[in-house]
Amino acid sequence: MDHASKSMAGTGVGRVAPSPAARPGDPGPLAPDRALAELQAGNRRFVTGVPRHPNQDASHRAAVADGQHPFAVIVGCSDSRLAAEIIFDRGLGDLFVVRTAGHTVGPEVLGSVEYALTVLGTPLVVVLGHDSCGAVQAARAAASTGTPPVGHLRAVVDAVVPSLHRAAERGVEDIDGIVDIHIAQTVEAMLADSPVLAAEVAAGRCAVVGMSYRLSAGEVRTVAAVPAGSVPAVAAAPDAPDALSAPAAPNALSAPAAPNALSAPAAA
Image 1 (tube, rainbow, N blue to C red):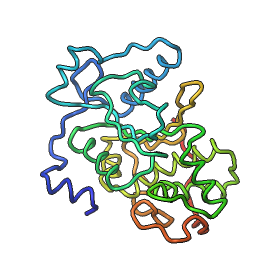
Image 2 (cartoon, rainbow, N blue to C red):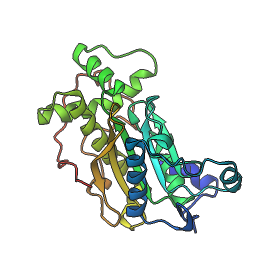
Image 3 (cartoon, rainbow, N blue to C red):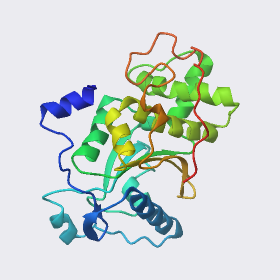
């Protein structure tokens, strides 16, 4: 049993009759494809300048005070310009948001995602990155100089380094292309490191999507997708050393990348 599962088991949390994620405007359960459609529609409203700002009034605040039924988990970058409820035009209780620099993923992030899936019944997980990502740029700078950053920023950089190796294998050098690879690799790593998430996807209860946000335009596009009901090929084990769950080796910034069989991200 993984770290997050142990913690949840210790608190009595399990996948027993989770509260279904509510369809916006409807108390019924929401399917993964409908949840994705809601996010995409909200982003279109944001981009075109006609947001509805749903579920942000006093009456809705009171309505969700006793419980939450978010229809999507957003595992996003901490960048201050990437506020999920704003760019997807949603409100209170709609999104279960977990943010770290470079949308890096560790046990606490996975545990939060698993809580949303197994307790709240959330049907969609989105990895949300963005162009010109500072965490990716910091990792590339550290890799090029061989000098790791000080303090806990080292953990962020080490988590991004495998994506740099994959980009190098593919001949991708521009920062936004590397960001797309990092988003897709984060999706892969989450499925590999969380049997709970992989099982929810295989059972058809959840889908996982990787999205990239354009800071200037405000729009999101899909760069990776694992549909509900599919059996994630990466659920067995990652094909390279897992920098997210094990201490980084002293030479992690210059270590060669392991061969990788990840195919190109599927279009939504």
